Length: 128
Image 1 (cartoon, rainbow, N blue to C red):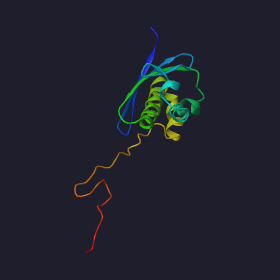
Image 2: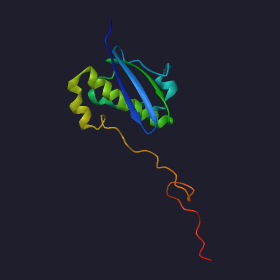
Image 3: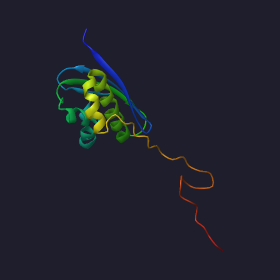
Image 4: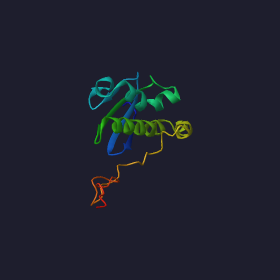
């Protein structure tokens, strides 16, 4: 049986579950080709860990992403892909950590507060 490596990536409210196998560089996202799911810029962002290591065509990637928007999903895929690469080969940890691919981006949307129309915006103030 072929060896598979699994990892989970998160960004904002998006979650990506990523499976890696040795292969020819085929990328599937939610049972669709990566080009049918993400735009060109999002593909470049999501697959950055592979390019930084120079292993673009060495792995087949199969992943499911859900939650959030398309940009957050691309970020979640990037995080999950980096984690899966470390599971596949522990030597990848140092360069991936150096480039910041293993760090979970903890920025989330700030909650709306009562008495205000948004998280920070205030209703219009009238002195008189």
